Image 1 (cartoon, one colour):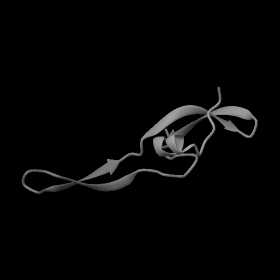
Image 2: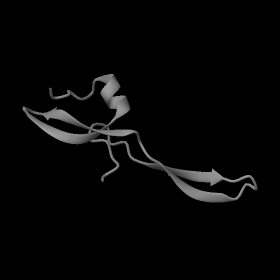
Image 3: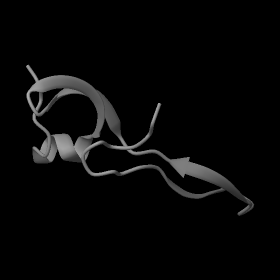
Length: 63
């Protein structure tokens, strides 16, 4: 699965997990993506869209 929003292009960001002893291990922060049906021109298509784009109305949901 591509972890990228089709609307804004938001993808995963990377950082570090810190344990109690402050040992750093690499980790990944994934974007909150939902697979929804959106209108691509006239035809509906299933795509991964982040929840910020859904709430902001940047994509039109297909009914």
